[in-house]
Amino acid sequence: MGQLIRAATVNLSSPAPAGYAQLADAGFESVDLSIDSVEQFTGDAAEKILSRAADQAAAHGLGIACVTLRHLPVELACGDHSSRGQIMASLDRLVRTSGELGAGLCGVAPPAVVASNGASKTVGYRDALNGVYRVLGELSQAAEFSGVCLGVCAPCHGCLLSAVEVCELIEAVASSCVGVSVQVEQLNHIGRVEDWLAVLGRHVVSMRLTLNTLAGIESLLQRSGPADCVVVIDNSVQG
Image (cartoon, rainbow, N blue to C red; front, side, top):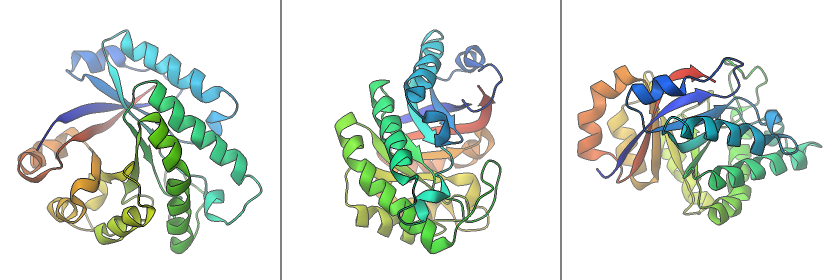
């Protein structure tokens, strides 16, 4: 196990003030800036929202470990949808802005197969899988240029339910800038953390979990976790 970077989630989609001071007092050194929808990032909104959050975090000595988009629009899984070009331009801007702020990781969730908080529209499993494959491939160049790794969130929204499937997806994209962000809390009825780590190995770039879960698997991460990993503590702070 190499460097373990602990970052706390700050939800930028919430209107409540962010608790950066509390996070610094709790011993965190960095944050994950999390947003629910790419629709927030039309025009120059990405730069404004993320830059403001980064400045607020820096004022309390916190760096930006990653930026996470919690829901890819289902339109990206619907072939050549009329809004695809605009959505992809916003995602490209999000990745590049993340790099400018020093975030080494940009998390991307697949389109939703099952409805969940913040994701009411859904698509079929195959469409979601094909959609996230296309998005990762199209964003990999911007990620490489910006020095950012794309971490596809899995399992997530009823998609990417198998570690083998995730591994095959990443290897099909064939970019050194694409990995996986393992959503540990979603593994309860799917599989074991140790099996996902064994299958995905070097592809694991981050793990999202709660503090309680981390306490239970920290020794496992020390023994068999990836060489370098961002551990996102998702007791989500509203920001």
